[in-house]
Image 1 (tube, helix red, strand yellow):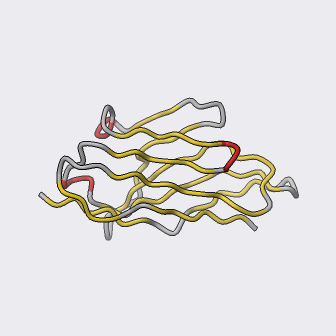
Image 2 (spheres, helix red, strand yellow):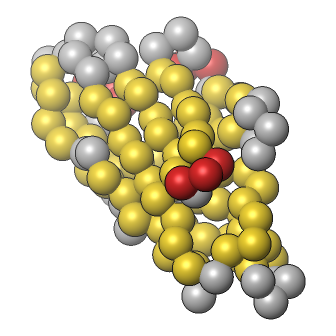
Length: 120
């Protein structure tokens, strides 16, 4: 059993910053890619940023230069630093992890979602 717990969502004014974190726990042998997605009500979940276990990162064009994804492999935690936030960044943000368990099963695990609201 593996769980992801997210922290850090909230309300911020346009131009402000928020930091999301997501900690994985359970029967974890290793974690491959960790990612952040976002989803508006009634719409599909879209990738925002991802990071491999080796630290390679990927971002959607709309957040490049404003968001930074990072991870602490020792803590099984991924972070998303969001700067220069815009009203269009308002969404529910979900973390994702590709986990190899101690039973050598590969699981795709999602966090519970962290609402982010950016006011204009």
